[in-house]
Amino acid sequence: MSDAPAIETNEQTPAAPPSAIPPEELERLTSDIIAALKTVFDPEIPADIYELGLVYRIDISDDRDVTIDMTLTAPGCPVAGQMPGWVENAVGAVPGVGQVVVNMVFDPPWTMDRMSDEARVALNWY
Image 1 (tube, rainbow, N blue to C red):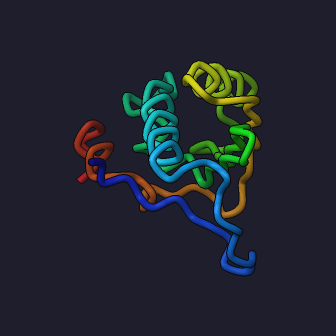
Image 2 (image 1 turned 30 degrees about the vertical axis):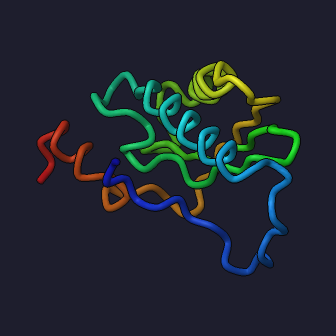
């Protein structure tokens, strides 16, 4: 298991009703989605977007559509226009996933504190 920072949730949002997806299936989908996210790299940084802490939220609806809120290390990132498509393609290839929507958000801004220990080692940023 990774040391990636926990995915943040909005504390003001009321607790969601239980999912119509069976718990084992939801766990498998979540694990497979995270594995897919770990295949997407910022070409300028040799660490995947999940371990870098760029993924803020993963939401799986009852019909298995997936919404991902993510950010970039900097708003002016040269691949800002391409990254959502890479993420959509990677997650869309996960068996059982419906439509994938990727939202780019910049609040809160990304900081190196969001990186996992794995990413810090890969980047030699200890």
